[in-house]
Length: 628
Image (tube, rainbow, N blue to C red):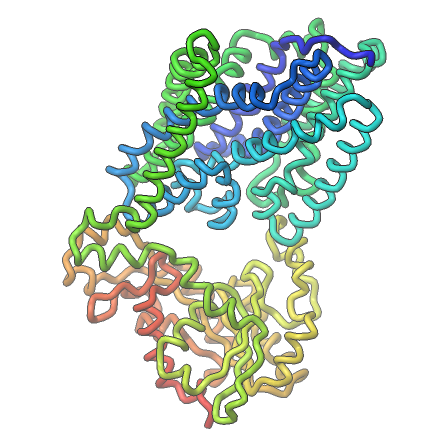
């Protein structure tokens, strides 16, 4: 085999790490200058695939590869700094997190220790949601991707390393399959594609293929100077475009992830030490940040998240200070934690593995303790516990009954009203309201989900221009009402219920949609308006007396009032169930608690169990919801 005998150190790679980590920090800090800063993680994936593969190929060539040594190096590299950050998070979490957040944080500790953080955060919520800004360890999802990659890849490489042809064919096939899967899953469910290894593996494989090209092929076969220089600048342009012009609305990863991935590959493969771009990336400022980039990545998100928990009003200059603090902590971490633990004379293999096992077991134990105690709920009085319990496992409660009834067959009980309910999480609230009241004795439900952003409209029109860019492909894939089983249930139903978080553009067309439904299915249609309860802050509610909570009235947003006004105007009274007026008894403000002091909503939109029971009791009095 004609190969490079060693993988030389490249300062420009450390500079590239700086180019990856800085946009991530600025993106998480909320600076609008870098709306696509999250693509820095994609740069890290390619770099990681390149470096790991290059190291392993060289070791295998020299016949000194050992799985035990490989995992020892990974443990030395990843775990000491990670443990230090987690240990610092624990007291901050205890003093700043309410039980719901502590519950989630505790679960994330267990996931982190099991190297499945990506799966955990995928199961919770998307990366771009507001709630994710409050999660101290959400950034560890990318570490989990790499850890899962480390678990499997060395074994595969052992089978491929001796043959360049086999190496390139197999890795190219894996890369292509993962990329196709990534595009497909991004269209259907972008969060899954964002978080899971099968849809991210191609980015690591791109780095591995670059390492293979540089390992198996002699240097002269690389592009000549001018061509290589041009390709390197093209790579940088791709990275900068993704960082500066991608945003929350970009359908990502999908086809868009090609820019940061291919751009990084072009830089790694084509940069040569004498290039101006290589010298730029090799400047001490960039290489210094690159050297501490791992610790910098670890420290920044906990600092941001705990700051958000502790401070009601946030300022950009505070985030600037937190970034500086992150850099200081990262430097100290690199000097006094990362570097010493990489020294084999200072810490033996036995010490590394014993410390790793002890640390992982400790994190797991603390995580399970917080998980099974509902976020250490016992810290609070019984009255406060009753309030705070409403904020735990809210997504499971909201979705469970609706999901279980997806396109379910109707009851054979002829005395029940057969209802097909079509909508989003607001429709899921409606199911809970039905099952929390006597309505369940009178109604047989079958459900079907259509995302609010797609527009719950039964019309032949193309709504793609109204839908957010990141949702367009997914909405088209869902096909709205174009589902044979759904249409069968609509034919079987006595009545069609529509319930959504109605956006204004949808509300303006919902009457037309109802007319089309009635024309095609000859069934009555009921439209349930959306509901809002205003701002909900568990911390502020804890500071109120019971009387203050009951008396509290939150103002409704102008947008909510506008949507409700449009729906009242467009729909006749017999077709419209005005949930906002029903729950609020006002068009401009809404109570957050029942007259008995029970919380109606945990987030200002979705119902608590008490809220569902309250709504169910109000709906039971509406004769339109029962068989006549």
